[in-house]
Length: 527
Image (cartoon, rainbow, N blue to C red; front, side):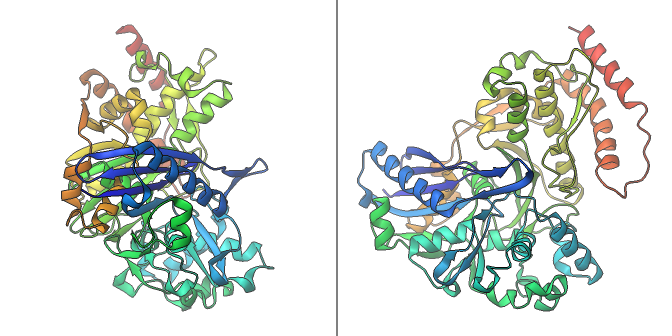
């Protein structure tokens, strides 16, 4: 039997799970850290490296205590993080600032410049990230930092994703040239691919802005999939965490990618990791280009498959803000939500409150709700927002299917599906397919699986999944609701593409509000 630690850094907290190769989960502990936002700049979102590492210490020690074991029984530790969460560093891997968190959208102008030049120069990399480079990704954020921190530019020796920083720090690596970069992170967010020799050429980056002169060399270093070891736990961090020095730390990855592993992903599955945002994950032996899909990278989710990532820029965050505007909690606002029927509210919600990650890749968008009347409530809006996120998910799944990605099973993973059966039912009804939900929280199981491989407990991911992944509950679509959503979805789809791009063709929308009212009235009469 092997015991390992799986670590998941989320937007607001870190979760540490101890897994046994023969018994599965032994204990889970969570420690929170602050997210720094500014009321005068809604695009601003940063976090402190020190806050995160202090939380990791608390959660690790709590998990060991809960499990009733000693720290020297833990044989490996693996970690995933949010991304693209970028940290500029100086000599000795010293942070020069806080992390530009994944949900920081200050780099919209930089993203537009990168996208425009990539198309003018016919850069192959832009096609493999859906045709649009995002403000959520690495080069955009790094360039924004360089432009707005002239006093620190001379100290910059490199920049790293969160998962790479933590693995390096825990391993005691202080030379940035020795840090192993995650293929998952650099592939999905930095336009890296072995097809064109890694990162985009320096000539392209310098054309974007001379501030990027020499940046390719600064970002150079070993890139590996997560079946490789990034380092071994240093004596200093072993003492802080209460673990044994020298245990392996595999190359890290993004949280949603490993959440998909923990949810049991196999070829033909699509996993919706639904949390503050939604990441939509799939794997395939081969796939071509998929317009608007934000990353197709070999080895990023599963080392032996092409990893495909899409998603929504906000999901749970939208539900939360609806409740906060109503001066209540999500739990209170959700009471009685199961009584709502498809289309009953007469509202149609385009959930662009934090922009559009896929398939429009447009951070300039804002949320839209159509159909308001004087009697609508915050709970009505919440239900419409759940429907809206499901419709947006269907847009993405349609795009995947149109480009040959097999969709055999749909799995709703992440934290929200565990506590929101209404969301799972709405998704099954909107998507017209059964939705599988893990019987328990799969978060940090994926990192545990990779730790088990690093410890030598299993030889393949599939063997580890068989041993530790949870079984699934199945949410079946309801025929009457499916029929209603089949009427609503074409309206949503028309509005999505008509309102979502500055260059969209003119669209007739005069029928939308009367149709929403008519559908709502029909549903209510059928009560």
